[in-house]
Length: 442
Ligand SMILES: Nc1nc2c(ncn2[C@@H]2O[C@H](COP(=O)(O)OP(=O)(O)OP(=O)(O)O)[C@@H](O)[C@H]2O)c(=O)[nH]1
Ligand SMILES: [Mg+2]
Image 1: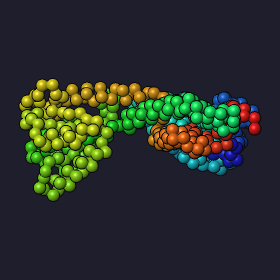
Image 2 (image 1 turned 90 degrees about the vertical axis):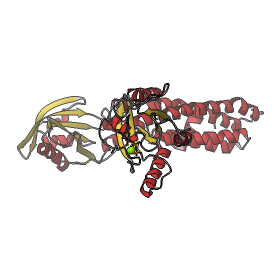
Image 3 (image 1 turned 60 degrees about the vertical axis):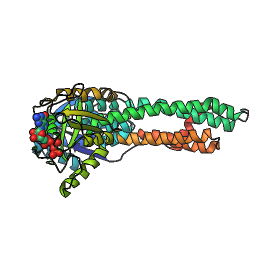
Image 4 (image 1 turned 180 degrees about the horizontal axis):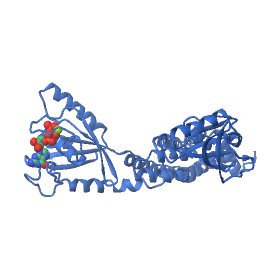
């Protein structure tokens, strides 16, 4: 793809710094540079660095180094220059302003990366990964983004697309070669097992991606229990901060109290809730409603029980209510009484090491999922799920002996979803691939 205009922007963070980079990309990048630099830039080769002055009508603006890239060997695939000027806000803006008045226009957000994608320098998943890397706040996120940047999504997609193409080609062969007399036999012998195997693979990848995304974005965790068992105390102990109000009065917490905490490499997005019990107080009841809604959405439940008082019917009810959730059952107030063979803590004394360990162990597998090749974000995951649904539909049609056309439509739709993950796609490409590969000769 050719763009006619040349774009410019400051690529480093705004504010005072030792160095700032003004980036210019497009067919006129060197022309723009020539107009503002005291050098003959026309002979500058790709991958070279040059020293000189930026000048504005004879006045020296800054002393700079310039990186020069020639198309297609640059980040965007276009001619590019990076002007490294002194990082004062005023100077940087002036250099950018000179670029803009010398033939470049202001770049939009992400436009350099967009051009890199449109010029075929990277696929959509890699473009997304650049953004993720810039925004990464911890090593798990950064590592995962770098992994994707290096093409990990492509690596898992290519075989999936390849196999889907194979399945489609088998079905096309059924149509186009009447010598396959026993179509049913071919279908049950080849197409069915291939389709089932394909579903198994994508199921695994989707599961891994769900784990990975959950780990990277933090686990939505709710602290649940009867009033006064020490939920808010536990929140405070985990956060190492006096965040929620703690009193000996049952029904202290009414609103949800939130906070994030890192435990090893795992981030918990914690919500402390109002104690759940049959209540007469209207405000408390509204708080309890909120607790139950938070419980509904939570990915992890920390169910707190008062070890001193022991388990009663209300605890039992909460156990039953959270039975199908991922949960950790915690016996608090172990300084008063410790029940053997339970996960016991004392939130009051900050004695919660066993809980931290339990959380780290619980998510050890998911952490390793964050290192594996799989879909990287919700957009990709949604497309993968949609592809899976289409192939499941196709499988049903095959099993029910439906028209081949119906099967193909679903498989093609899955194919397109997968291609859309990397930002490619389109039916024509699909048909090209199928027919060029199998040389049907029509
Ligand atoms: N001995 C002891 N007391 C604790 C412990 N954890 C909490 N408490 C006390 O138990 C009482 C209730 O604690 P909270 O943290 O407010 O309990 P909660 O579950 O948030 O209560 P509600 O918000 O009313 O539902 C307070 O007096 C705490 O000091 C503990 O580990 N040991
Ligand atoms: Mg509380």
